[in-house]
Image (tube, rainbow, N blue to C red; front, top):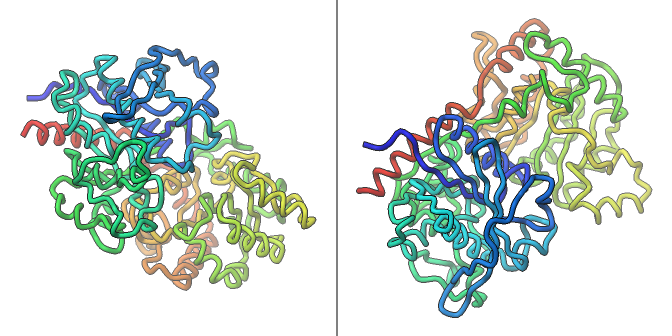
Length: 513
């Protein structure tokens, strides 16, 4: 029998609020908190990005200095360990190395990403030994942590601290398997996952496939939705790892992410112009009128407002938007797009915005990472509204909008649809991945469902879904009932956290076996 309390070390390349590039940072913050609230012994470990994280702001203290990490027979590195609190009685530890984690102002994008995170993975295990944390579970989030299960079975199998530790590898997005695009590596040079590692100073280290080695060595593998767990075992979604996943099918699981209801609460959110909840949905329209005025759109509470908040990339369905932009703007609607992305697609959005100034606004998440594009737009005398970085929270867009358009070609889970529904902003989604687990197509006959779904990844199918959504919006009483129902539905972390505990217990049993 297992003790009711499990000792869990949660490892991630990013943890909000210290570092974040997307949903990974959200999950790596919220899931450990939910596990701690359910009575388990949890710690979090992440890199110390010296140019990004302010130790004074977060009251971080250096607890170990100049710790030697032996990487191989020829190479070693020194690291420092820092400690803070993610919440009361939930320690978070940081791995500091100036060369690999303090010289860049961005989280990712160096020419030696694999070397960075190989060092990080070894340092994580060294930290657990130094602080004598006999973890039952090391929970490894995404490719950056993928060598930890490999090292546990190889280098640390006799460690007094770690010999009984089971590993769980969570796939957040299988597209990302190592520090470069896996498909750009020639088949001859691709990592089999079964050989030893090259030496640390060998350029071949950058070809090591962290995700593949995690799948081959973890006691349990899970994806961030049940549907995505099924999809990644197929050729269409498996990113060339479908065969090894299928071979380990008995160890592959899926758990849908949740969201932190304290962070996404329209009744208390300080970023909204007007707070509201499902008892006061009529106040939501004030947020729409404010946003319309803020971005120079026609001020009319009855015009349906759609939004998109994501990376502007092909994966997110922007090719569908491009294909039917002439049709979309024939509808009586307004569309606000918040996101950063490739220069070519951004320029196309700016062109559409100039052609449809009363219907389309595009804004950047921030000005960072877009300076060249913004500079070019300024030089071309483009009005500021067309390149203005966002000064509002993402949730202010949800609060103002009636629909969120999410036409992703694939989506492991997605948090956006859960966040937006919390604010009465209904999803129009492609029937794929985590959307299948969280969005049901609305049927007006039975008043069932919580969104508007298109099954084919096709621009015409998306237009039909948008048209159905706009028709529902016109039926005021029915629309308000639907919004209230959606806002009441729970997507908190409480239930997923329980499922993770069951998963961890499974991993412990498999480790013992």
